[in-house]
Length: 89
Image 1 (spheres, rainbow, N blue to C red):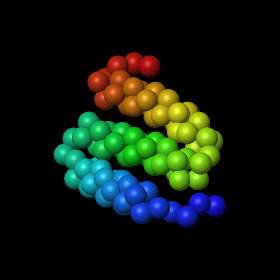
Image 2: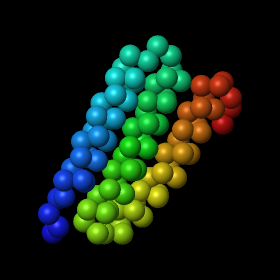
Image 3: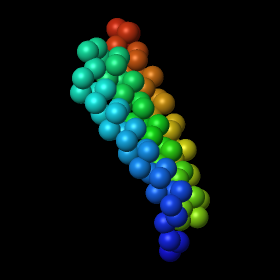
């Protein structure tokens, strides 16, 4: 296994701080759309984290999983937005 480089460690710490800020937005968000944006931000950070792990371990499978996760995240965000708008499925 490849030893974790300092640059990757810094990137992962920054992503962790971004997740903490998004969780704060989810908890304190005064409206439902604010919470949805916070959740979508966390999904995006998870996707970026998978790509970073793929770069660290030099494995393509992490990037493949990130692509599938991004697609599912996008579809779920669309459904939540449609629900909040008051539309029918």
